[in-house]
Length: 140
Image (cartoon, rainbow, N blue to C red):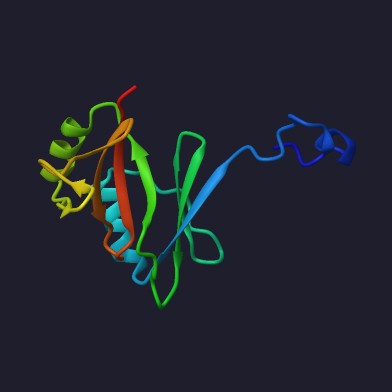
């Protein structure tokens, strides 16, 4: 985003006030988390920031691993990766040692790690720090 935009330009409806998303994930052990994101998911890290966080860029989105002694408290999906073929992606990630969750709950049942939810298929896994992550494939 251009830092030189004036307030009048930004106030116009339809102006691009927000142009990038960064998902911040708390991690207890940065070395362990980096191994997970780089070796299991195959992401490439940018340079570590002065505050200790490490950033991964995926398209126009960033994932920032932020050191935090308490780790995560979230009981929901922290982020989801859209993939073109969920079954093939699951197989590829399993070959790197990733373990997917399976569910058999009212309204949420996985078959071969995948649940169909409306207009998408989804599969969940935890990162090394307990953050809940997801793959999803749009059906339409």
